[in-house]
Length: 316
Length: 95
Length: 102
Image 1: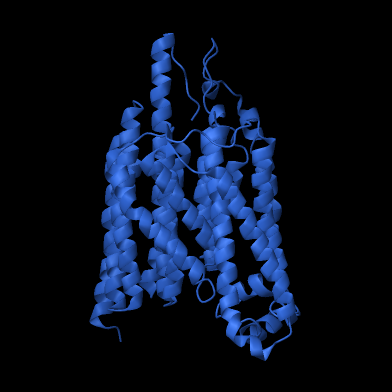
Image 2: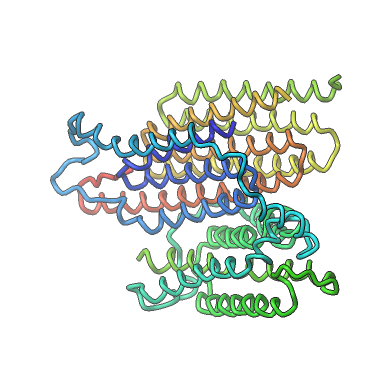
């Protein structure tokens, strides 16, 4: 099963690389991320699959908004370049690079097998000790919130840097649009009615993912993206720009600093180290829930800011 | 020894898969958009519904089938919506 | 159990067929339709996998697929609908046709 999905994955990558036409490449990329998430799931990591599935919808929307200007070209005497006569050799030349990429991948696939002497020291250490060190049932959450909490924080820092870069390097100086300005998508009564039913379920499910991150697959990042998807639904329902973007950026920075402070403070309490402290047992699960909530809110704020920034200001 | 529920569920799952295959045949046979979207609702709504109902029957009354029922309800709301939005946008754009 | 595995393989084969529609489809709407079909097939594969391993918590992934997968399709459809309308008005104003790259 997984081999079929992986072959499909490589095939999709091979048809993405030579493609040059605006919207098609985005649509292929959406399918590529679907298949990626499926292969993550079948390889046994539902957490990453959920993150990929939630992010793929965001990335599709962002790409469509950002590269919108490149889809439309005006006809000035010349014909449609799509219909332009291309010689067969030139058409075949485009596929040489992807094929060359595929051959070593298949060779690796067939000939590379990890030997039996792979060291499993760290795996055994984590699996035997995470329950008493950190608490919780989901080992993945224990690893990324306790053993590797600084890694997670630096990944979260990437989003902060992205937002700062977007808002300070943009050609548009204003941070917000006037409240109540009409948006750039079509309004449709049936869609509004149905999304009104679905959006609360989405918000509820995002909160569920954040709160249950330590006992089931899920966690701060996935739940945060689901909560941000709720705000895309809200944008599609009310059809106006009405987010206080500046305040959300402040809130996000405060949340990030709180998470860093808790992580640094946790070192002195014993969380996040290999030292098992018996008297901390009571607080360990609440530590996981607190960090998940902070990271989830932070990611939700970041995704909302990026979405509103791009859809309202950058694409003018 | 397979129970009656399991056999009935398997039959429903196979029926859903067959419906999907037939719908896909129609999807590949038609070349225009509006016949295609007519066929796609058969694949997505009828085939999916039969298949997932088969899974519910197979698992009996449990937490697992409750979650599948939640997925069925969500898909039953969303798939017709997507078909409606796509056909409406295509009509607006003069396809 | 054989029924579940067979259905999973069937879903993979159907996804490959929809990929043909995505590559060949004459308009953007065909492609968006095929994306939606593939998303539902992926959801069904996940549900069947969770059913084989009898684990209810794997179904959370299927739920988030169904909930977040549709947003992208609906957003793109609504977005392009308005864009096309604007383009038609431009065509009427300028009196010449504007071709589109899809």
